Length: 312
Image (cartoon, rainbow, N blue to C red):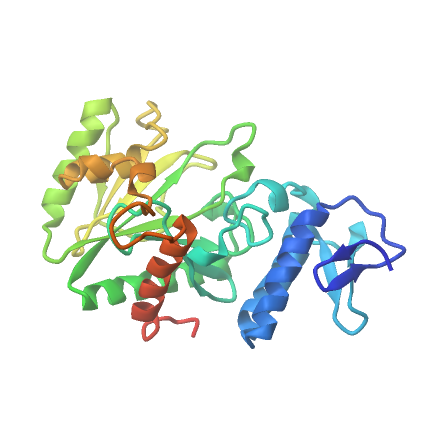
């Protein structure tokens, strides 16, 4: 037996290059899920070991090994950096499991860091994909199921939902982007026209143009291959706004999507996610860590979402 990774040992004859720290972290998460009898989550972690790191786990022998190149998924072979660098991959050392709200077979929900409004969250594919075009149909389908279920959950709380996605054109490290939809709950009855006008005004302020689409389906249709875009789904059946880089070539600033939404609704002071992080120094938070406060918010949404969760 070789170097230990969580409760399993690395197979003695396995010397392939792999991020052992990432393997260790993910096997530990899987074992914790098994201990809680959350076998769906455990299976998800096992799939991520296989798909992101190319690692196979043998529970009978209590060993793990890197699969031979011919037995590895194309995604794992092509992306050895996933376990090291992607904040949203379950195999990553950066992954913050306390933010997770729901996990399905192909997608999951997590609280947004520094949420713009209470309950703001993200929907992502489990297996790393940099764009909707790179995602499997099954993963896209489950992401949409989760998005729609969250919308129903927020509606039951008297809230509308604005959804947005930002996709930048290919660049040197663009494969490291992890596709995600951001959902922002807002007061119910908010006119789609007001949302549209506010976002268009913010676009005009920085020199980018939106086109209005009656069809609010996602992924947005009619895009060129590898085209960059910013897409908002407006509330109340109001269609969508789309900034296409093929027709409006000025790039939107990196944080524009959130900042525009914040300014459009009089929340300019919350435009920067970092200022929206929970404050351990605030009254009632004494002695609590940021992670503990974030986990409490995630648990709150998890409780509300339970009866709507299609993965349950």
